[in-house]
Length: 578
Image 1 (spheres, rainbow, N blue to C red):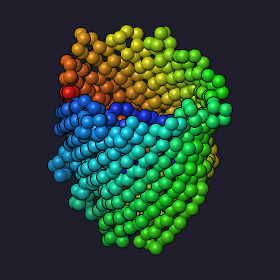
Image 2 (spheres, rainbow, N blue to C red):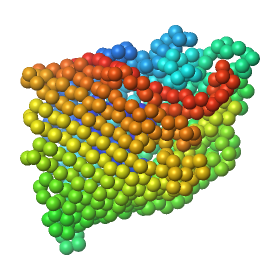
Image 3 (cartoon, rainbow, N blue to C red):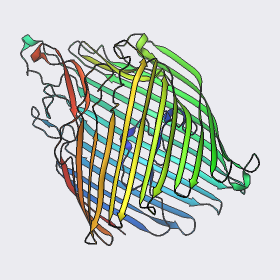
Image 4 (cartoon, rainbow, N blue to C red):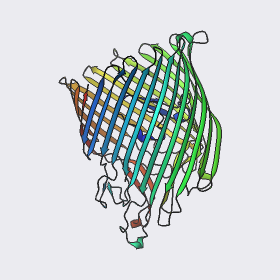
């Protein structure tokens, strides 16, 4: 979510420039967010307009021809009535790949523009209307894989990863004597292109006796989405059930349309070109009750019922309809032991509706996938110690998944298609720990670690008992911030994760890795300058991996092909606030 707008299907639009906070809700959020909140929600909220005129200017330069410039300004437009804020951010880089065949170093480039505007109308003492506008124009290259797993591409048809989005959210907040009415409508329109060179080579690179092939794949999507959410929230004067229960009640509606065009020229002609249309509509009603059993113990209960309808058709005369009702929610207890310690536990249910895989090479069985449901149980404690200089969070969790949706891919005659399927059952459990320690006003030491055990309980014989893809057994982040000489701050952190399976389609795994990052910041009044470096040791690590035949030089034997993460990057960021 970005400023109340759902970007779940168009995530390239997320940027941290002029963002006030990032909220991470872990575990199923079935009560408030429904289908999009199966495993959690990430919400970005930009800086609000202020009465006084203020602004922020920021510029960055770095290696790989990295350049970024951002400007944000806001203030009063009409006294005591209308506030506004506008931000524009441009980010570009050549990327980390070199294409020696085309003699270019920007075929995997970054070229991103984001503009945001926020108008806040103070209609009355009790009524506020907010209008958020977002424009996203992203024109990134895509040339990430090579036959020798290096950063030197030989592709003669580099791809694209683009997105153009225009979106708005209009929210009305009205304060009644005993409750608050929040009404919101949002709409987004996105055009996206994803394309790549299938053979990762150029015509003539291999002798004809090796049977080289030429392939290019392009997916163009046009998405439109409209969301309406209306909710009533009680205040202390409107508590029910003996005056001890706060309540929320709401209704939600969504309409989503996607048109897909796949352009897939190959050595065999254009028979793989494909068009599809998908439309879904859903209506939901939800409520949450927070019952204060006493001044320390609160019982939380929530329920959401969602009606989902979807229609699909494509150029291969396939027509499908889906109509189902899904239920999610939670029950939990919060115990405020004292001012510095909170214990909690909750049981929640989430869901993610089924759908259709658009593709020309998939079997009838693989064309559709079913709704997944998830039960999640967690318990934890948030506390502070040593006169509030040490803060800690500890969370234990356990979950059961039914009809879990898993990502697979199919490679057939040099044609690659990824799709979703259902495993029968899966489970997971683990622990998360976070520590923040402030031994002095100048020093902050922190750490976080996550341990995870997860597996397919019931699936194919090859995968049963194995961990799903992208599920490392551990992840961690530890570091410190040290302010010295009054105007200077040194920051460093070490982040890492354990090995994990790249895909559910094969048994190839990543290597465990760590990344060391540091920065040195100088601040003088409203001016700051930061020298930063990421992955200082230039660790080589992979973020994606596929296992299939694609290299004519070795007789098309199956091999592991990986996409590398970012190498060592460094730069300078300067900013000024006014």
